[in-house]
Length: 282
Image (tube, rainbow, N blue to C red):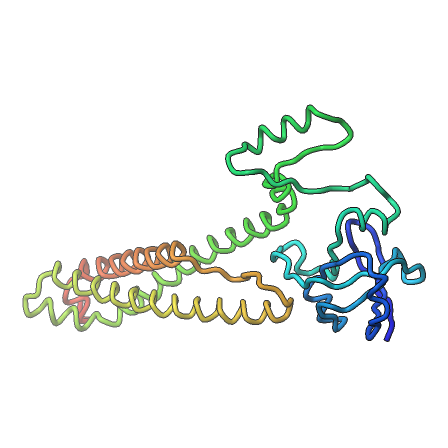
């Protein structure tokens, strides 16, 4: 069986023809390649298959043996792209592209203890015609879109919290107003205002604790569902919804604080009212 594809590799378009059941061709194989897992799945390739590589489907070159299938590191910048990748040894890639001793970009790994800033400064002084960047600088530059999205999400979160606080205060006022008769009776039998105030605040705290627990469980469930759906949709291991212990602690603390504040305001408003007014005779 034989067919051709086009894929993007090292900034250039390359072609690849797959040859299956070609044991006699193995003697002509000159190189080994590694295929991205998604590409291998789409083409039905496995380790040991033989392919023919070229810069275009109509100009195939030498044979190559699939020696490995790899899973690239998940990258949010690539999740929506449909590019597929093949890894070749650098001399073989240069020969395939017809551009020996030329590269568009490459990465350098530093041994532990070597400062990245020092390495960048020395490389910049050694030659001209290229520019050296730290990996975090490249990551920061390519992540500007995600930073904007993150700020947008933070703004939505702040607006949501403010609106929820106002809504919570209104609900607490309405619920406490429903306790007017109970408060009036307690006042008539001699229960002190401080005791009534404390009971109402304690009730609000219990409601806030239960709400925080249910909200945390709902958030964890929604996060698991979101990750399961989008990981399957994009065929990636990226985490789309991340709920950290810090987020949970902050959310619970914020919920308790808002619940106690709303309960205290509503209770204070109730205990300051005269018992006859609470009874509806004032």
